[in-house]
Image 1 (spheres, rainbow, N blue to C red):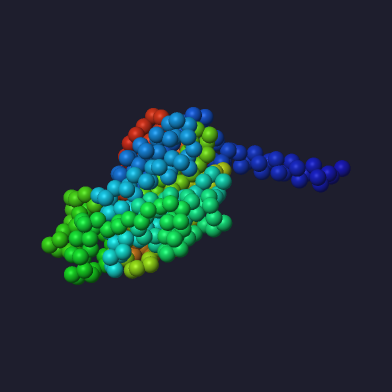
Image 2: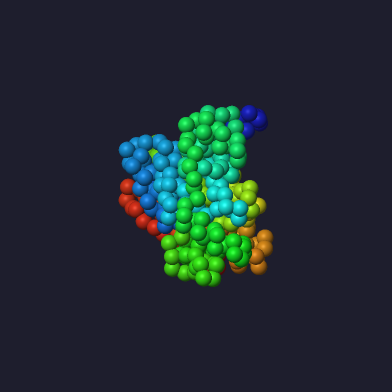
Amino acid sequence: MFNRRKFLGSSLLASSGLFLRTSPAKILPQAGSPLVISTWDFGKAANQAAWEILGKNGRALDAVEAGVMVPEADPNNHSVGYGGLPDRDGHVTLDACIMDEKSNCGSVMCLEFIVHPISVARMVMEKTPHVVLTGEGALEFALANGFKKENLLTPESEKIWREWLKNSKYEPVINIENKKYSFAENQMAPGGPFNHDTIGMLAMDSRGDLCGACTTSGMAFKMHGRVGDSPIIGAGLFVDNEIGSATSTGVGEEVIRIVGSHLVVEFMRQGFEPREACRRAVERIVKRDPKKAMDLQVGFLAMRKDGRYGAFCIQKGFTYAVHSNTEDKIYQSESWFS
């Protein structure tokens, strides 16, 4: 005799069995095998700071905050934190977000005068009922919670901005980390110390928990008030502790249009390797406007729950840094255009 309850139960078990075979969510990392990955070459130094925590069995959330604080405080990094290039009105405005293994998240946008926006974002997550604070409200919150107001516009960044004002051309440059500013031509020229925009960092601790952080000063000479993908949960960063995590870098407007980091995690949910999940997100951007994509750079970096990681970008030049028990390296991402 047909037993509907037994039939439904066996069907659910069969479905669960299929999921176990194909989903990375069920491939658990080995205990004691932490991992941190981050965008661009300067991610290597950031990873080292994160590893000081991860290597001592610390929490991934503490690690990503400590890690991205390194470029935030670096005056020679002109696109993250202190020393970041200003908007066209001369304001250094910072964006950051953070997300933990329980889907708690915090974000600040257009924050001025605070060296470490990532720490303010974490405080928004832990001390308020909100996810996002912006502008003056974010600054008031930071000052009320002990952060100090500081001038973030360094003499070098101010000099670059004043030279830019002579022509005021807004032309974002692909892979700016390999270029420097030419005062004579009022543009970026090869061979200098200026770094690219965002640092996104993803970490897994010895308990297998995933967390992430993302911080930037945004596009140089942007319109005042412009916000890119970096502080937007789901665009610049997304963490799902059952599946994996992802972050992005490049032209934020294009990442926002596809909710990029969330999309990468959803592709991993479907069973794709991190590199392939990133490639499919890049494909979504390229196919939307192939001609426009030829002059764009967007890169995605992803970590799966089992400790696998990968990246993909539109143009050559995107790099990412990896630190684990077995390696401390910088890798070149594969790209859509060769």
